[in-house]
Each structure stands twice: as C-alpha cells, then as structure tokens.
Image (cartoon, rainbow, N blue to C red; front, side, top):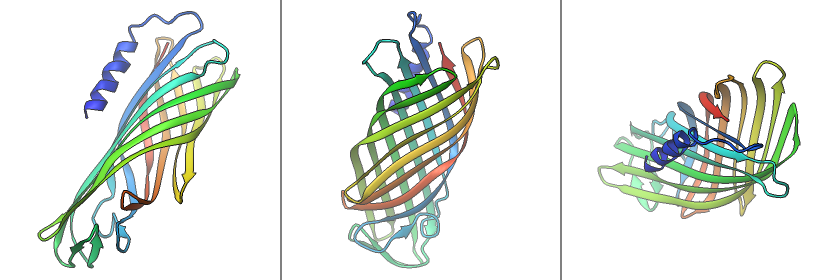
Length: 246
C-alpha cells in the first residue's frame, strides 16, 4: 500500500512538469479483480488455490510511469508497480503438508497470498513512426508471501526475488484518430523457474493529455523450490485503465 501511494503521488506530480522538446512523459494505472488459479507447494503435494483453499479472484493494482527522449544511445525508461492480494477461508476436503505443517481434512483453513512487484525497464525504440517497436530489459523485484492457518497449523513462506527479464512491446497508431492497438511481453526462464507476463490493448488519447485503455493482462509465475516454495500460478483478466501522456 505504501508503494502504491508513493507511485500514485509520483504519477500525479509528473502531470505538472513541462516536457522539454522531444521529451515524452507517460503514465497510467488501473485496479481490477483478476482471475486467479494454480498451485503452491512446500515439501508436500501441490495445493490447488481454488479447490483446496477457496481462492478464485484477486485484487490487483497496476501503476506505471515512463519517460522517452530523443538522445541517441541512452535508453528510454519506465517504472511499473503491481500489487496482487487474495485471501480465502475454506474447509479442507483432503489432508496435505505445507512447510512441514500438517493440514487435516475437514478442518477450516484461512489462506493469504500477496505479490508486490516493482520493476524498472530500460528499452530502445528502433522503429518509431505509425508503428512503434520497443526492445529492452526489465529488472523486477518480487516481494510477497503465502500463509496457511488452521486450528493446529500456521505456516508462512516469504517470497523475495529479483528477476531480470527480456522486454518487448509494439504499438500501432491509427492516424488522425488518437487511437492505437498494442501489446507487451516480459519473460525469463532460469533454474527450472519461469515468469512471464503479457498484455494486449486498445487505447485512445485525447488532445488534452488524458486517455483510456482497454486490454487483457496475464501473469504466470512458476517458481521451482525458491525459498522452500514451489508455485504454478496464473493471474489474468481484462482491465480498463486511465492514462496520461505529454
């Protein structure tokens, strides 16, 4: 939450800046309930977050702020922040082990999962006309936790990972309309773990700097015994975002 407030203040403050010739400042954000499914495990069988824990929808907030410039060799930059949280209560249909704690069938269990992701992206734009193409690298810090609590067991595993990711994006302007279509992909695979995210979007920007964007976003997080935690999680769904550009 503190990071969200900080990012929001930064984004709003940027709207007061006067962009230098050739300098473009852009940003946006949205909040929505995303579909959430997959499994987690730690030292035992995989636990289905929907069927075993009762999860299904997660609150997700996304805010971004970027700067593009005409200086050769120096990359453009963007900062983006994700915050995803879900909690649930469910009566277990089967017994399982998580982080050396035993969870017994027919007992209630409360569960929480949170993922905060703060990333910086440096990218070049080799094509910048009606069609815009970006290529670069993203460095993403993931902080979060998974907690399962029952009447006899209480386990929490923290996630603290820094991931470098390949970045690519494309955007096609529709001349004379202010409308555009585009998409983005970030991804990495390392030591049996993978993380990738993508979105596809359609947007429109007015002559008054404000715009709107409709799209679909998907995040996949597969950790292989990272800090004693293994995950195979998918989070995604449609979104409606407000944007700024000047």
